[in-house]
Image 1 (spheres, rainbow, N blue to C red):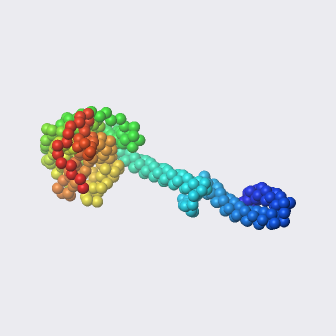
Image 2 (cartoon, rainbow, N blue to C red; image 1 turned 90 degrees about the vertical axis):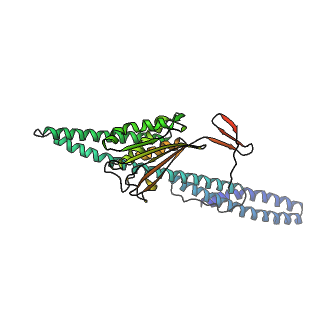
Image 3 (cartoon, rainbow, N blue to C red; image 1 turned 180 degrees about the horizontal axis):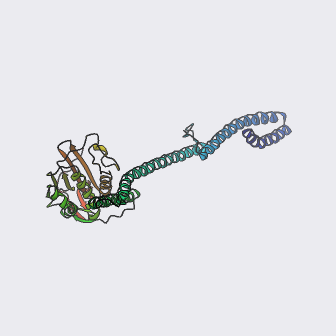
Length: 357
C-alpha cells in the first residue's frame, strides 16, 4: 500500500504535464495531437515502469536497513552490478553490513574469551582459597601441635605467594593484550639478561643438585631488559619444574648478522607432541604439567617477546628434554636497488650476495 502511494505521487506530475502537451498538440492540429498523445503515452509507460522498479528497490533497501538496525538482518548480497545511484547505495549498504557483521563477530569472540578467562581465573583461585580455608579452620583448634601449626602457616604463605604471582602475571598479560604495556628499547647484553634471570633459581638448583650450564659470552639486542628478564625467567621456571633432581639446564647465546639467539635446553620429561602447539596459550596445562602449574608463565613470555621483535620456538622429545629457542631480530632494511644494509643509525655497503627465491 505504501509502495503504491509513493508511485502515485510520482505519477501525478507526469500525467498533468502529458495532458497539457496533448492539449496543446490538438490545439495546433489533429496530427500534432495524435503525435503528442502517442509520444506522451510511451514516455508515461517507460516512466511508470522505471519509477515502479526504483520504488520497489528503495522499499527493499529500506526494509533491509530496518532489519539491520534491529540486528536480525542476514548479510545482503548486491542483487545486480548495474551502474546507478541505487546500485551505489546498495553496494555501500553491503559494505556497511559486512563491517557491522565483522565487528559483531569480534565482539562475540571477545565476550566468549572474557567469559572463558574469568572462568579459568576463578578455577585457579578456587583451589588455593579452598586449601587456605581448610588450613585456617585447623589453625583455630586449640590442641593443634606446634609443628602442625607451623606447617599450616607455611602452606598458607605458599598459597598466598602463588595467588599473588598469578594475579600479577595476569595483569601483565592484560597490559600486552590492551597494548598499554610500556617497553623501553635500549641495547641489552644477553649475558646480563641470563645472569639476572637465573638469580632466583640458583639456590633451588643447588638444593636439587642441578647444573646450570651457561655459555652467553656474546650477544646483544635492542629491547627492554626488565621485561626480557621476566620472559626468560618464566621459561627457565617451566624447565626446572619438569626436570628431575641432578639434571642439567643449558643456556647458550649466539650472535649472527640477523639476530641474537638464546637457546634454553633441559633434560627433563619432555612435552607430548599434541601439547606442543598449545604450550604458549594461557591456562593451558599439558599431560606432564605439575600439580601446582597454572599455565600463564609461558603465555606472558610469548607476549613480551612478540613486542620485542623476537620469536620463541620449542622442540621436545618425551623422555629426552625440551629446547626453547629465542631469537631477537635486528631492525634491518634491505635496499635492493642500491645494495645497502641499514641498521639502527648506520649505513654501510653490503658486500655479500643477495639470494632471492
